Length: 337
Image 1 (cartoon, rainbow, N blue to C red):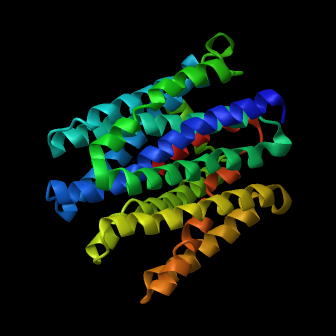
Image 2: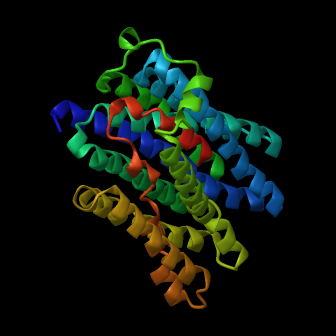
């Protein structure tokens, strides 16, 4: 990779880090809100679900927008949207207002993730593209680590509103992106894209039908298991009798396990290939999830828990086509996730 490509990776990775920090903090904020606003399990579930709905909307909207105004511009707008939404959500007086703003945050988040991945894919050589995308997603683990630290030290002392204000700071980061992210698909060089319906229909033509179905299925299962685990883990541990602070500390340990998972995948993906790495890590996820779910002792929780995030974050993106003109399916795949 050239110097410019490394710069692009770090710049886009910073955006991923901030997005991951927001998603990670939400799990801790839900646990704090449940105590402060006396929420039941249904209300807690709605908070997490409305963000996912927003992500689906954002993935479709910003994915299509990126073909018209360029990847970089779409990335900047989505990052601004979710940053502003976070800042406003810190001032929420009620659950309804908070959920409405979480929908806005989700739209920005859903737009940023697939556009950033596509930006890296289209500006990275074929020989190192898989590794570059894995390294981009390793910033997600760093964002979760930052979220765990903020939750552990800030929420018990200053409350959930302060951490949400902190997550609005990425709006300033857009200045960095504007300066350092160069897009080979700027508006002046973009050909007029096909209508959205035709692009979606093209995914199910015989040449792409099998890959599209497989990618949707893999992303659905991986994101279902990952968010099901991390979004609800702090709340579940509180319900089981752990104090809020101790739960944050345990999740911090599990979050650290994501880093070696990313880096080992980045190293193995060019040696084993995408399919073998993805298959091996998915099997590891299933095994560790079983032992974690049936654990009856703290020792088994401590040993099985970190293995779960270590294995989980090798996602369907490893199967992305090697030709740049086939990147569009990523936008639709992100919707299903």
